[in-house]
Image (cartoon, rainbow, N blue to C red; front, side, top):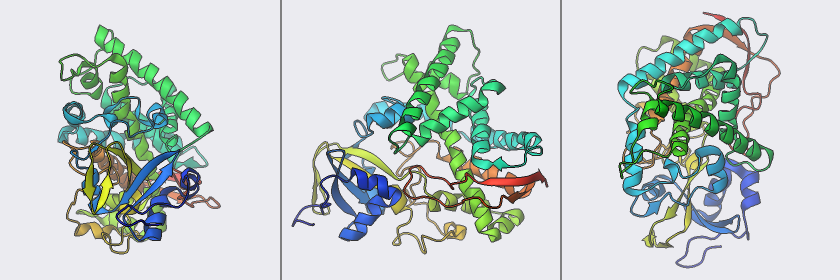
Length: 419
């Protein structure tokens, strides 16, 4: 129902179960129902305001109106982000911590990551040639775990790669989960924090040499605004916030492989590309396929937007998936069409797979450029350096209920050989 002068209110007493059953479409379904970009609902007993679209994004990323402290549930902090990490910070403290992450995003470091990604794909071929079937998502996680640790300067023995990659994957998979998936993610985070904390301690004691310029060095020796070093545990949490998102790119790579299979004309264009097509292809992967469903923030102080009252402390969710498929922003949004990005103006709020707004001043993911470079290197490998067949009989359907989601079979390929 919609009360005069108020935000449309979802009629359900609590929509938590509906969120679990509707997944990525939860916010969009209600925006259509109420013919509004904004509505109020109740999740886990708390009033929540949900918003979608470019204008909502502009408001959501206004740091004068919104803060991140208290927005991420503890269950998400204890699995995905780590407790009290950069995602939960605001103001000058956030800007200072953000500069730490942004210092890793130089052109030279991005080029290094791209090269490492290509090298690791090539090295993996030694194993794939002897395998009857390759599960691309699983292999991608291990490859990116190697890339992440090598790029960040984190020592990683070959015998522990699978274990570490699986733990990073479990943290990611715990988002939006209840029961076993949540418990697995929580245990995985505990193991990862113990591992990385020990590495940070060895760097600080001089037992382990960490080259200057690496993420390990940056986190180990970072000093806060009060000139005190990061607490060892927090340094470990933030280093994991460098490593884990790189491993998470395995999801995009799997979706990219699916796009190559379902849209063979894209493969042909990538093989003959001498310009910007690969960039457009990667951006369309990030727009079209489901990754993050929504993002949360809390109202910093009372304000009015579009005639609606936002009260201090209100929890607000921004619809990521719906905004990336908004018919007002994207022509034929439910079609996979990379060429749409040939005329995209680079808006900070209409394309938000990893958040919106300014990278330096706001809460947009600082690793967005890493994501793009890693996907580009991976798509180049899959199209120009190997031949393979997509395994018959597998289920390539994508559930929009499960969060996060993947092709159900995790994309299986066979008869892999060098091009």
